[in-house]
Length: 446
Image (cartoon, rainbow, N blue to C red; front, top):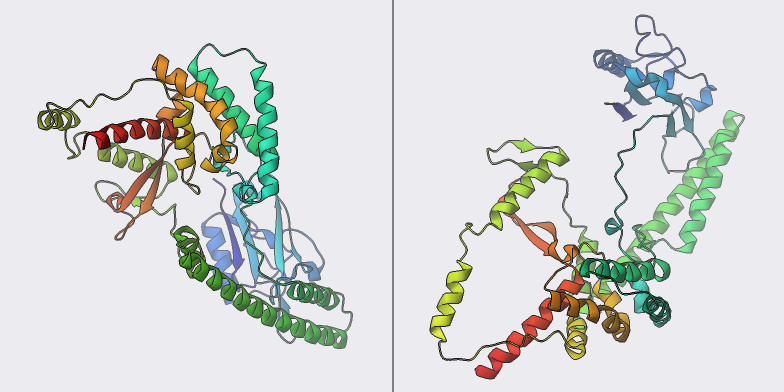
């Protein structure tokens, strides 16, 4: 494995490498200090090479820290790499032009690695469609038009000879429409900085460039003073914008609470409180051993949920439950219609799907099916009727994505994690149709 250590170590290692030829080069800055001795010893013990001392550069491209008065510059930020990967390190230098509002310069390293392809295909399920576009009338109209055009083209093709291929054809049409019209959601955070603050940021960047271009000490002190003033302006503007944004979010939360929109209220509250949890947090095995690798954790969660969903986990015997129900209702005719799903039943089931629910393995969210219900019914109803008549279910309908939700208590214990299963929307539609028939029959008898 390759090991890379980098950061502000407050260690000056200098340029004298006698006795440390395997650890550092001769292109360091200044003289070694106590932290530098500790760092070089650490690297020698762990077969590491200090990258910033290997490559010849101008001193201004090697120093990583400037004192507040601008008089002192040192190389105290370092990057160390495994000695066996020394040839993979092509360059290490600072980038003074990167304006990060700090007295440290950005340190950039160039690595060249030969990585063996794993052969694992990119999973489109990991990327969510930008459903927000469907909240606008223009986005809805564009989606309807694209969906209808693709559906009309599908009508000209020969029908498939089995349910599985029928389902694949339908999902491909829906996914292609989503990618064309919606695209994928951008995971970047919302930008709450105002235009005035961004102009101050640009002004600070220009001041930083003047500091780096200073030729004399007096020029540098003057440029540094201007940079410090620009930096204070940026911080004041950012605080002002953050307060304004928080006030706006609070107003939106009040409006959501007034109309009973609990989802929006919860999302805003979580965003403002910054509450979250580490999804890759270690878990314990049955024996109490802490599992840190992703593969070990996955196997442990698999073991846990198999036990939870096992028939022997303490739940009631399903056959005995049905038998007892039959004994309690011996004389009632509770026969349910076994006719294939109708257009009206499917239309009602699609309308009952809740927005904002995460999709299953098919990555088709409920909003996509509800944009144009007429076309959705014409597209999906033949598949549902074929499933019903042939009593064959597509493979994706048999799969569910188990998402672990932490409960109170020790999160390293699997028993403190609650699992929810994400199913395909089409299988939910069929389940709602069956449930509707059962409810109608039972309510008619009560």
